[in-house]
Image 1 (cartoon, helix red, strand yellow):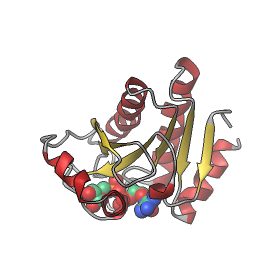
Image 2 (image 1 turned 45 degrees about the vertical axis):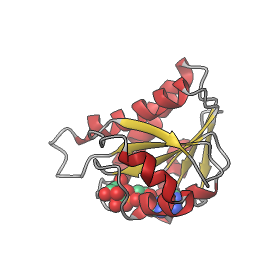
Image 3 (image 1 turned 60 degrees about the vertical axis):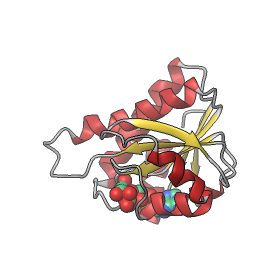
Length: 169
Ligand code: AR6
């Protein structure tokens, strides 16, 4: 395992890190899954700031404050909907991780937590998504000073076991 990567099973809204990543949709105006949980925990001021952002393209990322969350920032990224794998899904998912890491770096974040982007409502195959996430994050940490530590927050057991296998090989 990369020395700066941590596997976690916690609710991402509880983490005291500099930034948590939200698996949002292109409107950035909230939704279900981890997006809903983050908006509930951050309070209504998060939605008010999101309304000023004019949405976000798939693979992109935008940053807001964390409001009532323990995290200082929320980085909202939009994963691809899985449509069979021939619609640029892998590149778009890799872009989510890269663009989130870059935004965290720009805002001097030392610690950053990712959920398993696209693997819930958007149906991206979990093993494939995890391989991409670990690859992009490991490469970034090897060649950049910030962030110093990245948490992979695996809320469901299937994802937790997949990440555990990848990170320990
Ligand atoms: N903390 C950490 N991970 C969580 C939490 C939580 N509190 N809640 C769920 N997860 P999903 P997507 C995990 O569906 O597939 C929304 O409606 C969950 O187990 O949240 O990218 C958006 O607005 C799964 O592994 O995101 C979009 O419309 C992971 O988070 C759409 O869903 C991602 O599942 C995005 O779909």
